[in-house]
Image 1 (cartoon, rainbow, N blue to C red):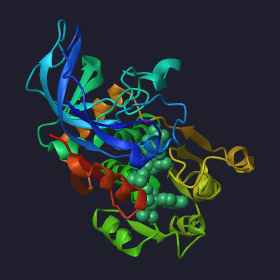
Image 2 (cartoon, protein in one colour):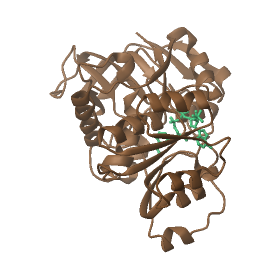
Image 3 (cartoon, rainbow, N blue to C red):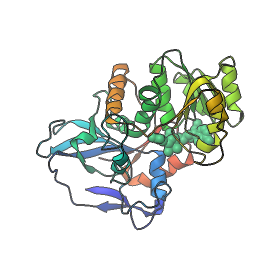
Length: 337
Ligand SMILES: NC(=O)c1ccc[n+]([C@@H]2O[C@H](COP(=O)([O-])OP(=O)(O)OC[C@H]3O[C@@H](n4cnc5c(N)ncnc54)[C@H](OP(=O)(O)O)[C@@H]3O)[C@@H](O)[C@H]2O)c1
């Protein structure tokens, strides 16, 4: 099998191609021929050693993959050869609350991931791909889409008529846009670029705020809600945006803390959280049950993920550079098989 692995030391220069023996599935295991893998911010951080500096190397990065089952081991009943499947981000998280060991079962670190033409996974670690999606589209779902679904639906209990504020036009935010619209919510989205705001409005966002030219975007968002505040913020900015999010949300509203694009630390005034009765919920991707609920809803509404650009396997490093540049809108994918 052909893989890319981080070898020797962290850094994009150390992301190199390698050959490994083709695996044979053991009991309850399935072998997946990967057709496409998508990139998440986490994958870039993993390669650069910023996600988990203690991660053992070599490591095949990327949590998200889609492909076809070509062999199954004894006892497998969930899937059969020929089935199209997607990877489950946390292989050991099937439903309910996350347990202590769940983070040890995530693909693309600590477990080998999807930047590979073949994966050996437990049958519980794959989810069937809805027929209407291409493999490239399906490869975008496991992390970003499930995270947005967990934030807004599984944990967020989004209701029709709610107003949702989204930050930026990356993978998580684009899925959050599609999920919010599917549920009949009103969407305000921010971006650093006017052209990206225009594209988001074309996809159905109701209002856009440029957070570069309007640095106090939380005030603009409140104004758009008649001074009330939004019901839900999908927070991906982290330290640089969190306090503003607390001011953008209505009394009793929810902030889903998902990303730390502008940093993960710093002093935060806690008073708004208690005085405004806010709910701040951490989100760690999500479980298999959420992923399956998401795929049912997406199939019913024929939601097509927003794919920014598809790179060939040979240009995997360029795909990482592209994501890092922030030029993308939606998801960046690498075609594998
Ligand atoms: N907790 C979880 O389970 C989970 C799951 C997935 C992702 N994440 C995290 O969530 C974050 C977003 O992930 P992603 O995959 O969507 O990333 P991404 O696709 O790389 O999106 C990045 C986009 O976010 C916007 N952005 C960057 N800095 C910003 C800031 N300070 N304020 C507002 N917007 C900003 C930019 O959009 P514009 O170009 O439009 O300005 C940028 O293009 C990352 O930190 C990632 O690690 C967490």
